[in-house]
Amino acid sequence: MSPDKLVRMANQIATFFDTQPGEAAEKIAAHLRDFWEPDMRARLAAHVAAGGEGLKPSARAAAALI
Image (cartoon, rainbow, N blue to C red):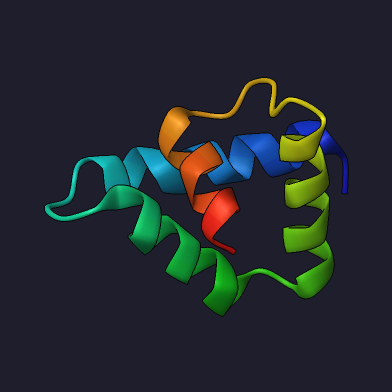
């Protein structure tokens, strides 16, 4: 899966949880742990390590939690 698609998917999840009460990053991280394959999470972590271009702040914060 391309980094662009992972960023788009992570941002869609972030868009939802950003509107919900509570800490968005924690909820996003829980969703990613529950529903994303380990390889997808690893690719997201690599993207963040490379600068995280295009990720919403809450999605970037969530990636740090997983």
